[in-house]
Length: 107
Image 1 (tube, one colour):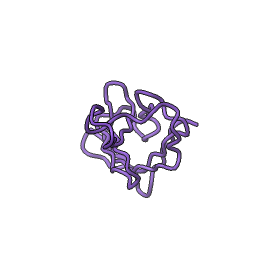
Image 2: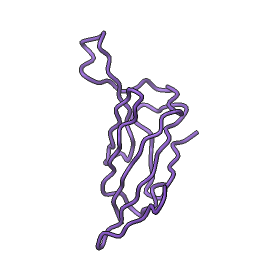
Image 3: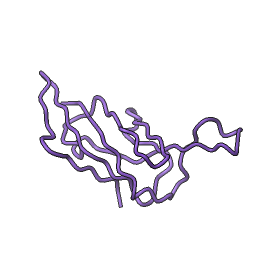
């Protein structure tokens, strides 16, 4: 199951020559290493300029990789110092219960 996006309420706002949308993204049931792809169309836009993710309360940290157009999931691994502060979630991890609020801008 791919990442799904839901646009909520009055989801589209015009900002001069740009647009802003907001809603939620539900992660996939089999996380892909390198992140889950998100398209501008899923977010109600023609192109994505910024994507701000409101961290869910499930222990994961999410990062928008604009160059790859993916959402990367990280977690803290406090028992393995060599891993660093955060490490990427393992491939095939089920994150389908994770819902992230977002605000996106684009055209």
